[in-house]
Length: 314
Image (cartoon, rainbow, N blue to C red; front, side, top):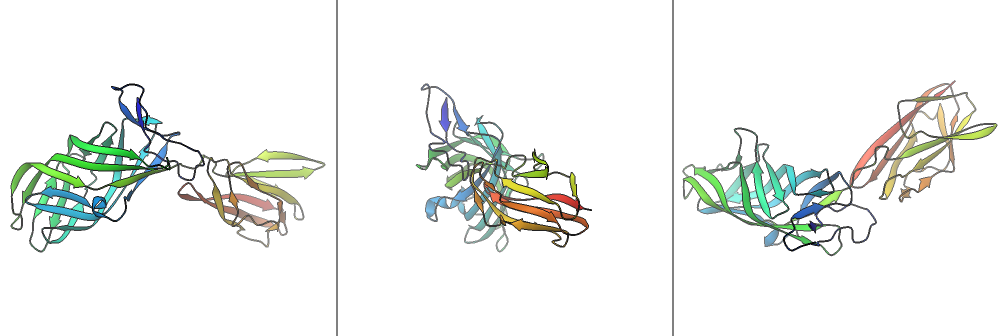
């Protein structure tokens, strides 16, 4: 099995996370990730010609300088990745501005080096101009060749390079140099860097609360809808811990009502926590009667999430 290191775990401190290797000359290639699921995003490979997406069709060339897309790989070894939410920008065709509409179609990259275009029933990709109308429509099709992959030296990203021929399409409109149905479309350039973002764990952060009455007992509470109750004047000792494999940053650490629930000690806002590190040495004190929510907003792994826990002070 030949493994393509396509899916990088963003911010994960793991050396040589991905590599291309083969157990036999005839072994099939797969997209390999050290964990799953992972979200995969695309960025242009630089700003030069090779990063421009070019489709030769209908006697002209559709050129777009912008391209984005997202996919999710649900297993550590996959033979294909399907990119949805694909969008082209800054496009021209036949010397005028053009619009590329995906119409819910997706690109399916096959690890073996081919490309499939998958669309809902009755839909296809459309490329249109308005100044001198020319419409190109690309229907669903499979087995388009060739897409090559290159592991980047950092072992955290991979470049996908299309050089696809034989694309089926139809062209119509007075602005088209050629009209009719064709099978000679060529997707000549459009290098992109594929980067994966490891999702947060199910808890993302663990909020550990110690309740002291005589002896302290520790509860690993994470964040939930459970309401914790104490009398006015009593405190909770609270710790925020990072259970993820990557570093996170605490962007918010605050009470919705400090007249009821007040922090005593360290504010975790701005703290950067590596895997299994925690921010502690702080307490939450009931200073007035009522209900208040403590919120913690975390960023890391290419995502941002906000968590909350409710406290009642009697």
